Image 1 (cartoon, rainbow, N blue to C red):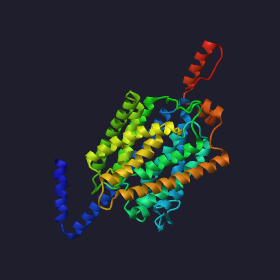
Image 2: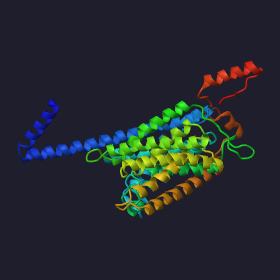
Image 3: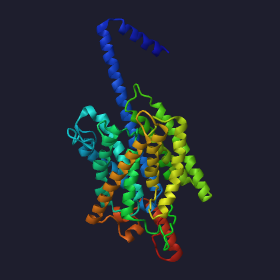
Image 4: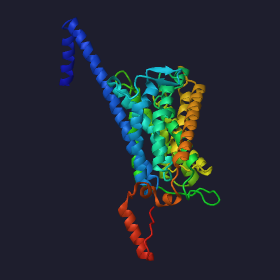
Length: 441
């Protein structure tokens, strides 16, 4: 209370001291507002950056232990290479000095060196890295590390920046059309999911995923607890993703998107749980966890525009659609170990369309949302397919069968993520049969 009285008294003294002091005070207030906005943007971006830890845990936990080091390396490289590519060319193609017909930007921030836009660049680069990371889990367990290293710069340096220019730059053609995607259901998540689909189609399913008759087999992940922790970290970071997309704290309602984000995530988990329970006759934890992520993806486009009740419905349907999508893709031969195509691609598409349904008006129409989604899907799938094909021709994209069976940790990185675990199992196998056999999970 005493601090509040002191602050009020100070303001009264300042504004009663004369016009010159009043001008100085106004400048001070503006400076404080600018600083507050920058603090919020950097904080939100840092929350999004921490989502990389969540992705690493989800992808490692939902896949085999013999590929854990490989998963970690791919997530690290997504951000390391992606950050440098976005600094060199990505930011310029998205938000550079001039727009080429609303299709891409050009000029003045190649090899970014503009301190005045530092917070803007930082906020954008963590989004670019998120789009790239989505691909990692979908192709887990069978892609060469060098091939992935060649592909990932394209998504952060070319594929993603072009789409962001279309949508989030006021000069972009989808922005002018009236397409709305507040925080990136389509721009980030659907894009990442579609790129993942292209990669999986080029690479093919894991060995053992389908039997001789083409029936899908369960290849369980090695740590549900790691996957669950990853989901909670992603949920935590998502508040930076959605609420941070206000791009400011002063004069903006950052609580509203936080509430819609929370409601959609909760509903997404329950929607996925209910549908999975009906189909499998069991309350499946994996589907429930992915349902949280599907709900988050679904609400991201309309998080600041839809009502709280609409957020619940969007999340609920996103979770349900995700379960159906996972089962559908599995049955047609698309092997996605972590469900990234469904969680990000399908739920992202639903999120874009949901804006046209629940936030219609003020220039937002379902037709514009469908056009935007179609354009993003076509551009992303086409470019990703071409890049994956070229990489496959140049260096080969898939590891040898014996390397895949033995695990990418050992064949690609010369190590085991769980050396004690491997040693103990080898001893048990040796004691029982008289010969040491690698029986890693």
